[in-house]
Image (tube, rainbow, N blue to C red; front, side):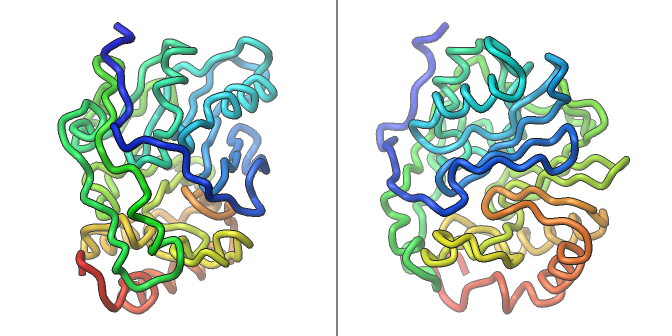
Length: 280
């Protein structure tokens, strides 16, 4: 079984970090957000139970970090019921094979992401020409070849239900990638948005390093369908989220979130869509 799984041949450690690296935040009592270098993972479930899941799988080489954060929160030897992916870009699946081997648990993603997770299709090349800062210029270094999770990865059920995550439903939020999804819990307005929007300007190295807060569109250098990305942001705004955990940047709540999202929806073409780039 195990030998089926492989990372892409361009897989490697990316030396990028931020002041938030290593920081954990309890956003609501059962949602725990931890930053690995420049990207967030979430553990969802109450600390006194063994019914919990991991959302996204961090940067390349971060498996030990993710395992220790998990055991710190849920106890030694604890393991999630599943790994749920917002999408399959390298910084969200960086440690996934090591984690699946260690925990022997299934992975769920939108069916449109499965070709990128079963070794069939590469993501488009990152666009280093896109309008933006240093991170965009560095993006050719980022792995984009498909990883292969073999039979460990399954499609999320088409009815919006999420295995092992009662109370949340998944919402298709494409644009940044074809099968990008966000997870939403109606009851308390908790949104796990992945990269549908982020709370830091992800293409600016200074802002990534300092984690300066501002709601922005999806990371520019990997987003290929800007019209779909705009529609996805509108869809999430209409949910009236109370708290949002995004793939990059700090979790945001309350008035800042509401006004920031409203501004992004209204001015997406100015704020999010770059003036130039090959996917414009």
